Image (tube, rainbow, N blue to C red; front, side, top):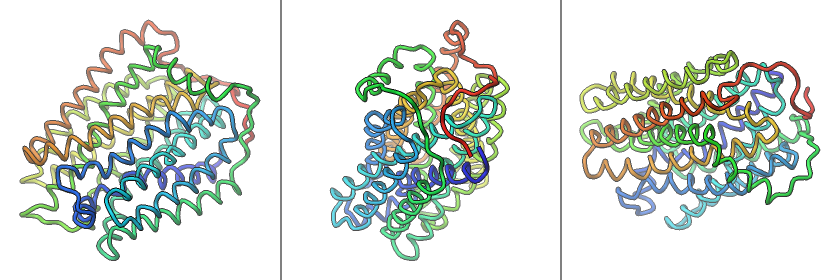
Length: 403
């Protein structure tokens, strides 16, 4: 896969995932405008996450039957429509519906990742996945800065207009610049969707899914709740200032780009364990927000490094195990991601309302500890499962056209 393709795929991931998370730094502004109470603000993020969950089940498996390039273009167009609905929403109900619609088709991220895995040689799959999925982190965290600036200058609705335009432009670019993704398969749609259910019987898949659930619940606890204490007295930071904290997370996440190379060399399981321990430790620093922004920033860097390293390792292990049904496998795995993110977003705002940032930090640390327990429990299962820690494999495994 050449650099142009990887860059375009990473950009698609960045914009698509940003549409789901763009509300995080402007929750208070959106809440005031749409008259959403503080303890329910998390639903502005979770609406998209729950829509994402639906898309993972009903849309992502289509990538194992149809040309993923065309699916990518179509879904990006529908994401743009959902964004416009949010931008023009007169009430909270309409905004929630637009966010849910956007989330359903934002699963184009997973179709894009599956496309990248399918057109990669096995020996470079981890590196390519690391590059493309770095776009996911750029979108989640970079959108915080972009959203903050746009909200301060033109209001929160401008965020969704900008992302709608970007989605449509990238959809056209995907059709023009990506090679067709041709596969010979006659599997029925019902069989592909049922494949997600069959994956749930695999111990390796369940262990990696459980890790993903707790991993992204911890991630969501930070990024869906951080705007609340930062916008409160005594700091009372603006949306732009709050968005700048996304740069710290971006630094940490991009620092984990080597996770793909480590996975290619057979170290994915070891990387997962070390990164999860770092995730737990990061909350000890994040919890100091009330008196030290410097420690908060260091904690954010560590947390996002850990999340990206684990996420890439998980996907490498699972796609190597199921090279013939990459879309279904990634879609099934990301169900855990979506559920975890939604749970983290909903619970952190409710906990903050009751116990402040100390309570939210303890919640995030508990989710991180849950991921460690899931990893430790899965080790014994993985050791007894052939291919749980796949070695680098040489040789072609795909019929997709390359440039």
